[in-house]
Length: 299
Image (cartoon, rainbow, N blue to C red; front, side):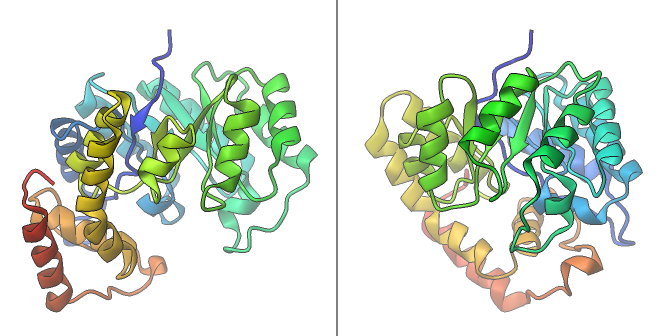
């Protein structure tokens, strides 16, 4: 029986060693760190994991390492978006074999596309999801795109029983609310965590932000579920400067600077296609001041 996904499911940053190779030991440390800080689940190989710039073999090795280190203590939701349907299907099947609890996938054209997210014909998207779900027994989260609307999602759910979750981050909340209102009795909606308490109030049952401030992110969800909404909002306000710092410096690299500070990663290296390293000692010092003001650890 698949476990229900709900809560803080951070997109796991990908660790590299000093030679630029995937650091599986650090991925195992990150898994332990997230569990120790109360994360309700975790999500390797998403967009913020630099999955576009990892080989299929590297992605599979990361999933194996994370699932093994997790040892069933939380659900593992694996990103399996890829440039082709064939590769997405391969990654989904491998994730299932490795012991993942669910997978999340967007159409290839959107995975390869620009921020403009070119519209993909509905039939092409439906065919993509039908193909990757052949032989897949675990739930699928649809990584929503701008081209998807409620009628499309209804058709998708009718044709593919695996579709049990939607990750919505194409607007600042309006589409999330629409999905919850129209589909919330049939699927579980996750948000990006950019307006975290608001997303929960609008009906989202989970968020998928970064690994920064994992204790605070996990605690917001626990407090909200306990009905302690004012406390949840205070916790969110406490971490906002760190969230802002990460997004407005160099988001993938900044997350790794934080994880280096916490003793999880060796380097803040990102794959060259993500862009050149941008942060310096002044940026790190600003992070340290923010963390001091937060009053942690735990963060």
